[in-house]
Image 1 (tube, rainbow, N blue to C red):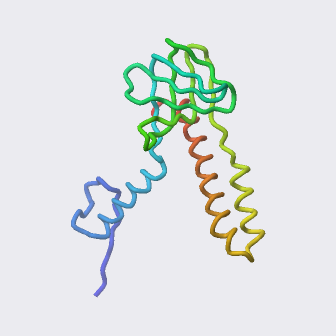
Image 2: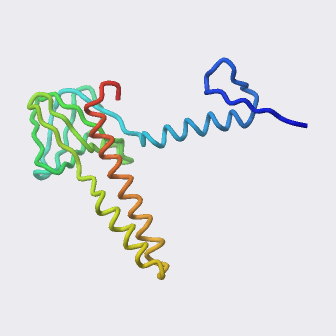
Image 3: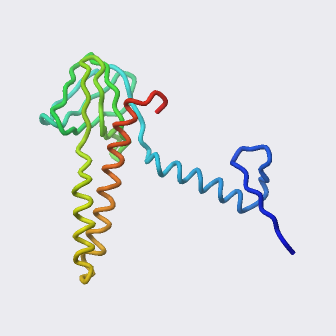
Length: 166
């Protein structure tokens, strides 16, 4: 007995909603899209208050947003009360919003965190060079992959600031 399987995009009219494989594919596609976005989002508005930690790290609040934004950038940050800013990042477990990139429209400045992609590649290379030892394989390669993913996340956050639909 031959079974035919027709694949349709989720939400299309020809989709068989009773097929368990199709339901799994739809859920898998949504999880993949969720994973790719990594919960990055933009917050924009006028700076209500700020607290300088150092020249690269600042915490501030935006009018209308409930989170304190923790921004850590490569170059010294430039913002003050009343500036209109757009910040891309993700919510932290602590309740703060970790900003990976910002754009100050009032001062026409931009900054982002250091993606450190070279550091991630260095960790992976060290793990591969010392493949004979079990320690680097289980420590260095996963750490390098995490650093690479974090660097990609920072780059996506920076590109979100310049996109019109992000």
